[in-house]
Structure formats: C-alpha cells, structure tokens
Length: 351
Image 1 (cartoon, rainbow, N blue to C red):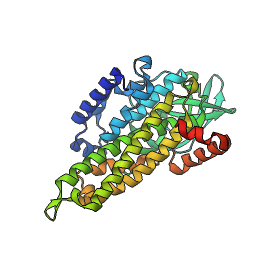
Image 2 (image 1 turned 30 degrees about the vertical axis):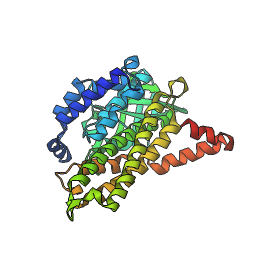
Image 3 (image 1 turned 135 degrees about the vertical axis):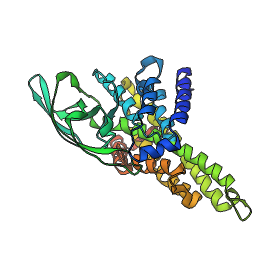
Image 4 (image 1 turned 90 degrees about the vertical axis):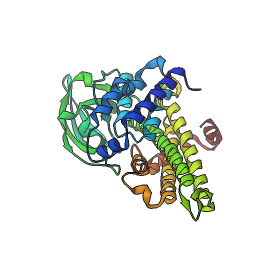
C-alpha cells in the first residue's frame, strides 16, 4: 500500500507534468532546447530530492517518480538527479545544487590515483545523459581494489555532444582533473551496484511509458474507424492489444520489483539480482510493445505532432542504458549457477 506522503508526491508530479510537459515543450526539447522553466518547477516542488527524504518517504516509493516521468516522456534528467542525490547521501558526500547526472550508462570506469590528500581522475565516459546540462556528474572508479564514488564538476570535462534516439543529450565526457578529498568516498556496493541503481530507475521509466502507450492505443483503437466500425473491433487489433496489455502489466511488475530492490536487501544494500531480472523483463516488454503500438497506429505513430513516438523512442533508448538485456541476463545466469539447483525455486519464488 502506498503511503500518504507518496500519494501526495505522485499527485503533485502528475499535475506538474501535465502542466509543464506539453506537446510543444516536447518538440522544443527534441530540437535541442533546455526546458529551464519546467526544470525550475521540478526543483521548487522538491521532486529532484524525493529519494533523499529518509523516513518521511521510503526510497522504494520515491523511486516511483521515475515511472510517472516515463509516462509523460519528461525530457529532463529528473531520474538522474534524484538518484545522484540518494547515492551521494548514502556515501556521505555533499550533494550540490542544480542538475546532476551519472555514469557509466555503459560498462566504463575512470582511472583514480591518490595525489597526496587529493585525487587525480582520468578517463572517458560515453553516452552520459544530459552531460552538457549538468553541473556535476557521479561516477565510479577503482583504487587499490576498492570501488569509489566520485563527484565530478562537469566544467572540468571536455564534452563531445551526442543524442539518443529520442534526441535527448547523450554526451561523451573526457576527464583529466584533480578532486579534493571530500569529493571521493568508498562505495561498498561496487560497480555492479552502481549500475543496478541506474537500471532500476530505467526499468521504472519503461514501465510508466508502456502504461501510457497502452492508454494511447486503447483510445486510438476505439476512435479510429475502418470499414464502418472502430478498428478495435477487428480480431487482429484485439490480439495485438491483448499482447500489449500483457507486456505493460509485466513491465509494471518489473518496475515494482526494481523499486523494492533499491533499498530492500538485508542491511539496506542494493539488491542486484532482482534489478537485473526487472531490467531484462522491462526491456523485453519495451521492444515488443513499441512494435505493436506502431502496428496499431500505422504511419500516424511517427508523426511529429502525435504523442506516441515520444514514448517509443525513449523506450528504445532506455532499454540499452545501464545494462541491456544481454548483459543483465549473463549476470542472472551466473548467479543462478553459483547458487546451485537446490536454491533455484526459492530464488524464483522470492522474486
């Protein structure tokens, strides 16, 4: 059952997104415009720090904001900033104001070397979400066998700008800089735990987008007529709608699993295996459901003025970020093999 605090937060987010993330704003963002007004509204409403409220709002519930943002195709780094605040707080590092992002979106890391009381950091991080717009970036690096969390000023990086399929910033950042001691902390959950945290919010975003796509398809199938009756009355469309609904439901369940696993493991540590399973299942649902949605709509689904393409292009992008299905499937397989046959059913039943 969702707490009262989460209910109020979600209602605030729904109203704010409906007001601020209009079709015109989505097209502006797709053209490269940074939506400063909507971003300021998110910050003023406290959404960017929702995962850092402690006992007032459990992390598993606060993470649900990523689902709502996904349903509205919000073209802003809300999920990245929320997660960065949470990870910084867990590691005892101060969270700066403004836009935050994190990497690796892919399986990359930086070189970290001790330099007296300070640190030297060097390396390249590719496809960083909203890199050009962020003030600081969270990344990980290994030093003497220990994983560290780094808070990096983006101003210290050389940036090569890029875009994902939805025309959102995905930039390459090259670092060769020094960091003070208070910008680096040990991160016991390791590189895999860091990537799993990002994967959890991407799974939630995909679940939200799929739920919105289902609503769009239901409305369209009831409104669009062919041969004198709504296309939703034709058996082929009904079959596609049934599969689409099943995939949306599966993604919703996967998102719930991912949210619980962020802070649900013993000792409050990120529970990686359920997140791996959730990211794989949400990604599979995204691929199939996006294809079916465009089949139901025909050519209109890709027209600039129609909402569907804003969602499907993000689905195709998000499923590749913070570990694609193949990468997480290998992790799942290795974990199941390591457990042995006697624990297989208990693992399945627990998830």
